[in-house]
Image (cartoon, rainbow, N blue to C red; front, side):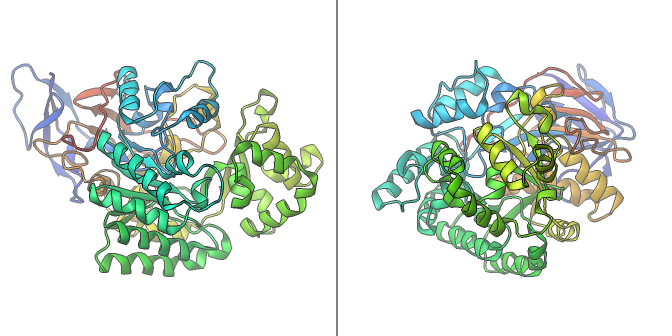
Length: 530
């Protein structure tokens, strides 16, 4: 177990306090001492941190590396950005529990011929990840979409009391196995078909277990305030902590709702509800093209049923009406950019807007989108430019909003990484460089807290997110003067500047800006010391 003394730097400890001149001594996977001018001890490696800032390792509260942690265990997009821990299983989709059809769907989504799902439950997934290893720590949530698909199915029918009981049992088993709570994705099938009563029933299970409920709420645009109201009702019914995922006001007509949105959250916190939010520092979202364009009715019954509807010429009028509800802006087709396709013949479409695609194929943009979704069997990613810079700053001004990427881990040089959103590589550096250093929206102490101490507080972790004797030796050592994101929409796979060293469990995973190849990450399971 290595002892490492980091000397000569400034420490921002994750509490919100500002930087102090201090040395940090790690012993194995823990911080052994913190103080000014610690003396080197026998056998300890000394690392000169003059001109550098030592912070807790960044915790990404909202990740999607459910299966790709097995494909990219080096987690380069994470560690090169200073992230040492990811909470995955968000937006209602998780790596467990699964049944046969869900396991087959997961393999299809991964689209790697040699990738096999050889687990169905929490213990099976934890064992598979432990065998593969990972450069960062991982914690998992349970997806409500998994639970509903395994009980009600992919249709829009209401869950019966018996089906709700079955969902609650599956959730409780997964929490007992080490998951930290429940996530919902209420714009995605099959979660979009659920009633509030169903979600309240599951939140009660989470509350009894002391867990957390995170939600991609039912609407982030025209129904935003009603969706937040539903979220608050679910958290109250469950008696649990709650997180609004990637808090935003989407669409120009909805930007004005920011005051009412903040009033709802502030009022809930004054009433004693333990509610939080997370947000990425970008003005464009990223999800499937079909989910970006259409309403819930299209997705009922699963992918095959969706494709059958899309292929039916008689449906085009209804698809037009659905698009106008979701995207009423006159320039909607110029605001949506294709980020990724799976077929080689469509690889060069990444980076085109739907307006561009319509011109290339000589059809109207919606017809081009439908054709592409059919060709790709729905596996088309889209970036939607729909948010307000002023509202982003207002949201980051709330002290209970953490910084999170809403992305999955990637590796540099991998073809998949070239078709990502820049938030996969750039989130922490963009937040610190742009909003803390340049725009001075927050102090450095508070900015680091949003990446460390706050997400740890939200998760209920006591040894992570802070630098103190006895805390986990997860550290991110950076240069405040130069930290900046280099990831862009055209070139998203670019490591940021200014991250010097990163340690996970006391081992270097990044040294002098380069990945060491180490995979010391831990599986952080509920019920174990964290």
